[in-house]
Image (cartoon, rainbow, N blue to C red; front, side, top):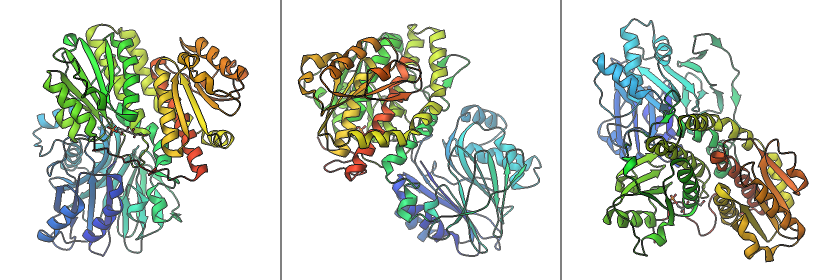
Length: 610
Ligand code: F6R
């Protein structure tokens, strides 16, 4: 998501910080800033930050220079609080300057506590809370910045990487990590800290990767790592041999592959702070809907987001028992849709900028419907146009083919369906508890699946030469069949069709012969037996079957040529696991064919034309 860099040494920090942030630009951001201090000159840090691109920051720095040899810099991709000058990092409280990646899960409770103790806030961010906590610990007598950070961390829940600097201890930067990446770069008489190797690669290739639950104290001459209890940890530096471009991709060959592997974390971030396990309920970041007045839900979206909406139909109807319609945004607006008061229109858009979806929202609003947007980009046009908005926390998606944006949309829709069902009484407390428990376990189960890449590579080699593919599924797996086909065709240029498995006999069965690979989504659940029958129909016609099934299914091997087994979960959440092998299959087939995986021909990441 956001980008972090820190420097401590003998050179002027500002150009190094801005240069490092420039290397992180590809990740996407909406504001940037630095805090720099001159240890020999009164050591009062100067914070310069602003909304918009780095060029805006540079312009501001030309007018208000920030001299000094110690500093921290940040590019922010908004999660809590809109993109604005005030919400940009660094945040300064007293002598403390702070930058942060990630999310503080218990920020509301901490804010209330600090407010009651007299703290004044100058931003809407969760980050500023941590600056107050560190300041509070120093006022309470913590002997140094490292101890203050360690004590402050005990109050914080969530995923984060922090870098903290103090005017009172100008020879030190303190950083901490839990779930967000952090790396220290070692130089001669100078050291760096960053969220990504890319930011510091032009200055040093000698690095130490910081592990979960570690605090690192960085001075000009050294680095000391401890755990959160203060127990020292030792780690040998590594020499990075990646090129700058490889480093941007975190060592993966393509952004798409990196993003496939980022999904467990993206899903964990999207769940953070939203599950109330004690109340068996969901919090939607302050979104309050009058659920009992909703007569119907209409999803509108395009492409992959449309497929997420089709899963949404299944989820909302089964968990909240509210009638649902799903429409392609580009169709909805031109057919004079019957929509109005009593309808909740849910617009799903990763980018938040898709013109078809925006126009469909305008149409729905004009006719009196309430609109809720689910997007991955805070303050993008679609959430701004909607009455309510709710965000996925996938982080910027660079690969044109959507992967982590899709699975986090499915998570957001699952949360929404539980929210609706709990409020209109359709979903029992017990069922909600089971589903929330399953949601919490998803990141680990997803990790299990993305770790199967070697198997998917073998399957890509076995089937990737085919001229066409068919994907089949029933229920919530039908949209996954559509998504599997879309993913394969957009990046490998192989023709693929997704079909409802029960519909195959009504036409596409004519395509089946020994040359056609058929990918069948057949996890354990109410449609299992019926889907196995469809699979038998394929094999009876010499079609080659690759089944995506549930781990522990000992029967499926006898019905298919190849099997990929994913962990078991609730039927409603299975799409979040079954789509992963399809993304990987598409990726490896495309990579074998040597197509431009991250920027497939004719496609754009944000479709702002009709
Ligand atoms: C496919 C893909 C597209 C988008 C579609 C809508 O991998 O990414 O089909 O899903 O263009 O984009 P958003 O979600 O940004 O509205």
